[in-house]
Image (cartoon, rainbow, N blue to C red; front, top):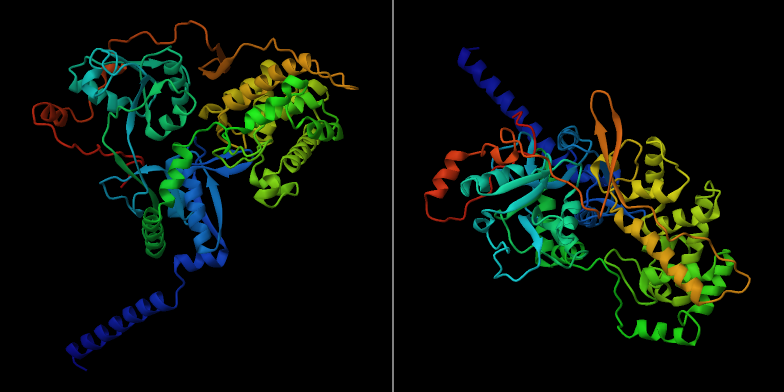
Length: 554
């Protein structure tokens, strides 16, 4: 056999093998979608955070979570959430096949990512300036980045926005003063400080700003300081069928508006309880002049007696939850007089929305949940203290309160006492320092809500107790002389590891001294040549600078 014939035969064998492998891979090897359907779960890797994934009253929620959950339902499988803290660990789980989709507010970058593919963008975000609402003609109002000249913008230490502000400062010839707070504050903390006139300006991701605008109606977030940037999911490059399927789902969700409806639910819907009938509050409260709290007093008294609670305390809870509006519905789907979450309602026997909205059934089920919480917190022997743990659990979920209790124990506080102890750790559970602590199992919580929820109910109960009598009920001796409101942080150096705390709502020095050599105002711009070129050129629609969310190992 000649050499050319041997070469030809070898060529035919290799070509046949390649074709056979390709045919097998295409027609016989299961696709990634088939594997997901066979195991019955779609695995999402993410981190606990205020917008994308969190637990609210024990139910998993979040913009990215809900969107991928809808996609999982389309595939006919359940969603499994894999929680890690660092983007690099998320990426590793995608590369090893431990997760299918990564969601972490990921910007689409121009640089190729080894083994990682981005989905179609599902949202655009931008950085906005947070300032108090004032007349837009006022010299203190900032309507553009150029107007930041001579102003002070406050951010946290290690802020991801520091480089962006440094670039803006360079463009303004170092006329912008960037001031940092030497504490472990969150963007929500700084937004609150703007609202309460403690600082003048800060910056935040648009979605964080939109959420907080619902709590602080005196802030303005209309001024954007960066161009819009596309945000997408990340998938292993080999999983082309999964990527194509998800892209089609994203595109269809845009067309049928479900994506926009979900965005509005999380970022444009009021976080305050509302009712469909504005006359209900007047109707429910009209009997107060006749010696009763609301028209539902007889029902409240009946079911409060069954769980051995002062009916006036239950009425205070209902007032806080819904203002006695039976059709009240929250942004999160909590419904009725006692604002039952769908899963809680089903757990205690209500299966239809008609049942959940029914005043008596709603109160009956809400008090069943309170009775269950009494058993859950039976370790708290003091009855008055136990009621506070129960109230906080009713608002935030018992899991978050358990986390706060574990944190209190870890740092030497009384884990069975609410005032000045467990309440502090729940209040500060919106800080990554605490919700990422190994003792915490339930992640992020906007702790200010349950913190002030408990205090508000106690105040209302004290008022109802003084106005309305209750036969055979002695009532609870709640004190309205509350502990000061403290924010907590971690103090760590070579010799000390522990807590530091500072009282909120008091005048104090909150800024670091300016270091002329190392201060943030002296950060080197990331691309000074590009910025100088921009300063000398005509205005243009400059693209976002490349955001390296992952280490540049590629």
